[in-house]
Image 1 (cartoon, helix red, strand yellow):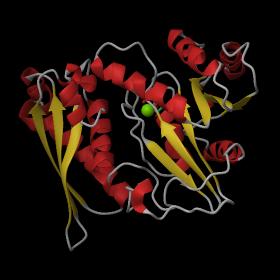
Image 2 (image 1 turned 180 degrees about the horizontal axis):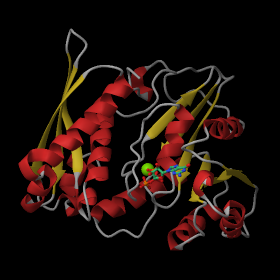
Image 3 (image 1 turned 180 degrees about the vertical axis):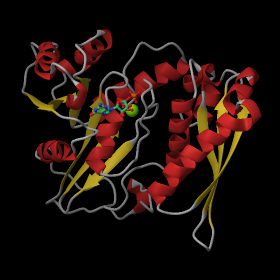
Amino acid sequence: MTDLSSSPESGEATTSSETHSGFIAIVGKPNVGKSTLLNTFLGTKVAPTSPRPQTTRRGVRGIFTTETQQIVFVDTPGLHKPKDALGKYMNQEVQGALADVDAIIWVVDLRRPPGDEDELVARQVRDLPKPLFLVGNKTDAAKYPDEAMKLYRALLEGREGEVSETMLSAQNNPAAVATLREQLLDVLPENPFFFPNSGASDQTREQWAAEIIREEAMKKLREELPYSVATRVNDWTEREDGLVRIEGEIIVEKSAHKGMVIGAGGKQLREIGQAARKQLEILLNRKVFLGLEVIVIPGWREDEEALRELGYE
Ligand SMILES: Nc1nc2c(ncn2[C@@H]2O[C@H](COP(=O)(O)OP(=O)(O)OP(=O)(O)O)[C@@H](O)[C@H]2O)c(=O)[nH]1
Ligand SMILES: [Mg+2]
């Protein structure tokens, strides 16, 4: 995982007419395991995952390339009832992805029967004339997976066109995920590659590292705080001895939140930094120095300009 950034403009795209390539959206309500599934598809971590709903905020693209085929996965935020401008932006990301892609993966959590938010997703995907893959996730932790799957399937009743179904554990069953990936390759239209065949994501390394930091912050923080933080990486320097020096910021909405993130004697910020550094070191296979600062951008979640500045546009 050395070069995380790749862009269609970089001029290396393959143009052979023998190639098949397309975009596949991964949608579903919050916390069902969409980003975990994406990471398992790719065998590397491109998207943050956490036990908290609404971890994904941006439609990150993950790229899987074989000799003649390329899937561009679009991980999306969990579809939910938005409470603020950030939430609206997140749902727009889902709508945009659904409109643009060649096929759709709808991920559901088989530990539970469908809820309101699942119905919301079902309504969005049911009548789209695109290949649809219903993925029942978390089979490892589900008591009644078959019964749950039946209830989710029923939400698609009336759909014209086939629905492919898979039950798996995105977290614990990479072989089943690889089998699903094979099926996805079969629905790709004939197209040139959209991205160079190196690189697993369309994010810059700075955006990627900021997401890892946000994941650790979301895991450690309590109550409303996980949702009110954003992260940003302002500097990434590779030293000659191999060490990577990353300077990041955790952005909060209110000055009262700053101290809550830092914690008594700086303990909590230190823990977030240590956990993020550890992940970055493993993923980059290098020593990392991570500097973290907490700054306040008042009310950023409701502020269109701040949202844009933080990459939510
Ligand atoms: N038991 C079990 N847990 C899983 C599985 N897949 C994902 N999880 C857990 O479910 C939680 C949510 O996973 P994410 O991948 O972040 O879910 P998401 O759908 O991307 O969530 P949002 O981005 O918030 O919409 C995490 O704690 C994962 O570890 C699975 O197959 N089995
Ligand atoms: Mg996610």
